Amino acid sequence: MEPESTVTTCYRHPKVESYVRCTRCERFICPDCMREAAVGHQCVECVKEGARSVRQARTVVGGRVPAAPVLTCVLIGLNVLAYLGELVRPGIVERFSMLGARLVGPDGGYYVYDSGFPGGYHAQGVVAGEWERLLTGAFLHLPPTEGAFGIAHIVMNMFALWQIGRVAEALLGRVRYLALYLLSALGGSVLELLIADPATESVGASGAVFGLGAAYYVLARRMGGDPGQVNRFMGMLLLWMLVSAGLTSWQGHLGGLLTGGALTLAYAYAPRNRYRALVQAGACVALLALLALCAWGKFVELTSVTA
Image (tube, rainbow, N blue to C red):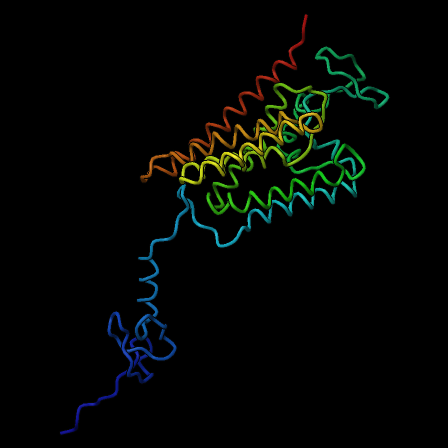
C-alpha cells in the first residue's frame, strides 16, 4: 500500500506546490497569490472581500475625502490658461466677460442699450442671448495694463483660491466642491446682472472665491470651530468686500458670498441618512433654477420694448 501524498498545491494554481495557508480562509496559496496581512498572508479573494467591507472615510457633509487638492489645482490651472489666452488674444475678454447689455454701433463704438435700438446697431451681452458670459467671466481677469490691479488681479484671486479652496475641497469632497464653486461664480454674475449697470464689463474669480469663503465659515461653525477665529475670518472677508467696492464688482462678491453660504447651509444641515446626497443635489438644482429664473426675468425686462 502506497503512502498518502503530503504535497499540497495552491488553490488557484493546482500545479504549484504550496505549504502556506491564507490566514482568513485557510486555503493554500502560492507566492503569486500571497498578500501581506496584519498577521501572516491572505489570498487575493480575501483581500478584495476585506477591502469591500472597509468603510470609506467621508467629509463632514458626506463627500469622499480627497487625498490631495487636485480640483483646486485644476481650477487654478484653468484660470491661468484663460489668462494666457487673453494675453495672446485680447478680444477674448471683450467676447466672454460678464456683460448685461450694450449696443454696438455701425462705427464699432459702444452705446447705452435701449430695447428699441435702430437698424445698424446690434446688442451685445446677456441681452443678446450670450448666456455663457454668466460663467465664462469668472475664469477671466484684468489684463496687466488695465484696471487698478493689473496682473495683481489674477495673482490675488489665485492666492485666495489656493488658501481657501484646498481647505473647502477637503471639507466638502470634490463633487460638492465643484458644484459650490460654479454656482457661486454664477450667483455673483446673476446679482451683477440684476443690480449693476448692465453696460459694465466685469471679470474675475472673486465671486467664486467669496462663495468658498462663506462655505468655510458655515462649515467651521457647523463643526464647532473656535467662534472668535471663525468670526474674524468672516469679518476680514466682509471688510475686503467693502474696501474693494470702489475698485471691483462688489455685486459679484456679494452674489458669490450669498450663493455659497446658502448652498453650504444645505450641505451641512441635510439629514444624515440615506437621503442626504439626494437632498444636497436637490438644493443645487433648486439654487440653479432660482438663479436661472432671476436671470431670465432681467432678460425679459431688458428686451421689452417700451412704448
